[in-house]
Image 1 (cartoon, rainbow, N blue to C red):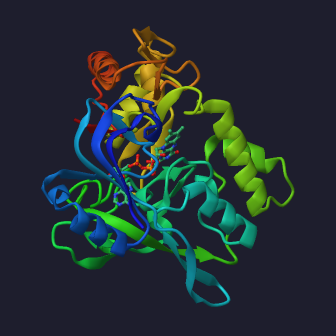
Image 2 (cartoon, rainbow, N blue to C red):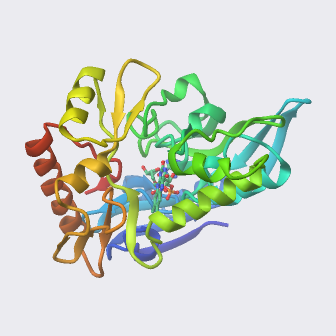
Amino acid sequence: MFKLVPNFSLRHNNSFGIDVTANYWVTISTLRDLDEAFTKYPHLSGETKMIIGGGSNLLFLSDFDGVVLSPDFIGYEITYQDDQVIEIEVGAGVEWDDFVAYCVEHGWYGVENLSLIPGKVGAAPVQNIGAYGVEIEQVIVCVKGLNLETGEIGSYTQEQCCFSYRSSIFKEKMLNRFMVISVVFRLQKMGELVSAYGDLSGMLKELDEPSLKNARDAVIKIRRSKLPDPKILGNAGSFFRNPILSAREAASLAEFLPGLPLYPTSGKEVKVAAGFLIDHAGWKGRKVGRAAVHDRQALVLVNLGGATGAEILELSMAIQQDVFEKFGVVLEREVQVVE
Ligand SMILES: Cc1cc2nc3c(=O)[nH]c(=O)nc-3n(C[C@H](O)[C@H](O)[C@H](O)COP(=O)(O)OP(=O)(O)OC[C@H]3O[C@@H](n4cnc5c(N)ncnc54)[C@H](O)[C@@H]3O)c2cc1C
């Protein structure tokens, strides 16, 4: 059974807590629900559509003049397993961290470093979520869903998803055109922890034989110590992507900025820590009206209470300009702006 609410407040459905509305909010748990909603309310077809999960990667600038679809497909189904691997299909509406906890409980390796990332499973492939040296593309077999323009049900193989750093076909060409219904993951039964990354490496080295649960607990501990809880302080995690520079550009920047964290990519380029640049440009903890740069993590912009999306965007643009003027580096947004 679908649920339709007209003139819906999105305040509790975006982690910045921006106070905007949508013409309609429609929750669906099956494809039949979607058919029924559009049959019963045919005028919905003429509305602009957007798909929302947990709203933890969005910045609304104004009321949304259209219909927001909230896919609530839930459930897990094992589709294949042998001694080494397990493949599991997970509904788009499952909370991402519930899925991670489920994998860790069952002893399946692959997603433990992505513990505590807010949001739903359906959104995870959209920006190819990543943390502590792991990206979701490494464990995805395929993404199943509905093309909202043609009405066709289809599946994107891992290659067809065109994953890149914090992006995919679903964040670009197919944005709000392909509704993810489920994602099939391949996890390892005899895996190894990915523990080379920063603080995580330090915490796991202290243990003799760290387990999957140790890795999840360590990631949770680190994240809680660094990142503000959106329920208390509105935010959407990293506002900017870490810029990717040529090895030469990165080396000359590091000479100018000793201590700049550099992360090699699979190619010849180098990812540099955007938070370090923002911090060294003097923005950490700075408040501009009701928006601010978080005082422990310069990559995170926060809503101090009652900020509009425009105020947060304005702050982000001032940072981008300043970082460019000081270091010649272009910062790109990771968060999606909804106009
Ligand atoms: C405190 C905090 C920490 C964070 N840390 C990280 C991190 O470490 N790594 C990281 O990568 N991200 C991080 N994020 C960002 C965010 O949690 C992820 O991008 C997450 O995957 C977004 O999920 P969501 O369900 O909230 O998606 P939403 O914000 O609702 O949507 C994001 C995008 O996905 C689309 N979408 C959502 N569901 C579907 C669907 N079923 N079908 C098609 N399109 C869909 C939306 O249209 C939108 O374009 C963090 C955010 C916060 C607030």
